[in-house]
Image 1 (cartoon, one colour):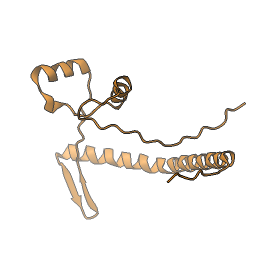
Image 2 (cartoon, one colour):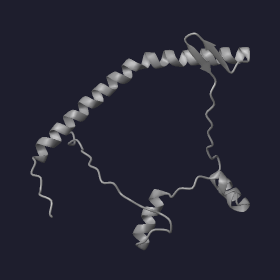
Image 3 (cartoon, one colour):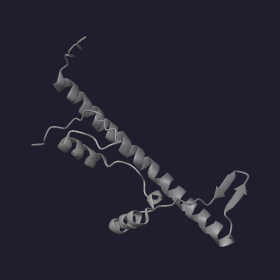
Image 4 (cartoon, one colour):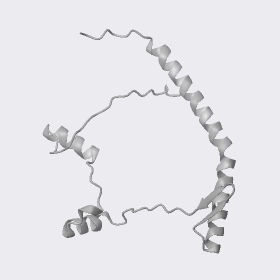
Length: 136
């Protein structure tokens, strides 16, 4: 069964899309502006809580309205990627590295060789984009 072509006026629909996108951006900007003082107040309170917990040696403080507690978020960025990779390879410390395929490299490999590296599933999702006309 063949899909029936959809007959639309691209000019009309693109105009509608661009108007919707502009309105969406305006609302998001207002939303960001409206939230700014609340986010600033929240950051000040969080700094106050952390200073108070640190000064008293507490990890948490329970109150009738809720509990404030310290939480840690770890980050491991690479200052020297080559040194890290050399260490991984030399020591076979594979547990220190995330295993995932590099999408760009896999796509390039597929384009060059016509096949995927073993164990890789590759897919492409097609969406649409809309550009505003160039301003004169």
